Length: 105
Image (tube, rainbow, N blue to C red; front, top):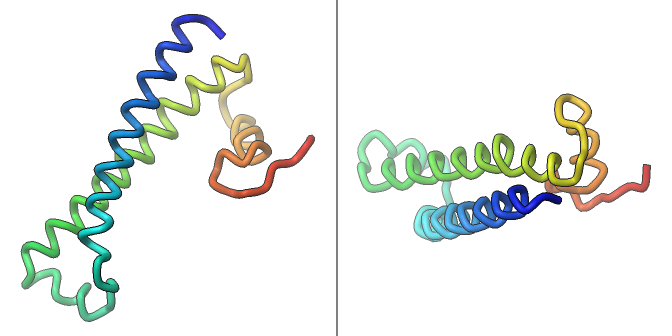
């Protein structure tokens, strides 16, 4: 792993940590009470709820983009692994896709 890769991974870890904290804050506010169909149908009339849903969706999407578009390619490069369609196999094999399974092969 090059010093550049190491520095980039540290930077991305800080960014992702911050994005996770912001998402968690929004999650706690949005899901303090169950998100029912009644709450969903009230979005047009409840500006505060609509803003919290929009913030959650935006923060979730930003975190997902940072992980998929920045962290994983940087991590694969640092590990000298190929990127592209075959990288999804490596990601799944190591459980980096959120699955708890990790295979040897």
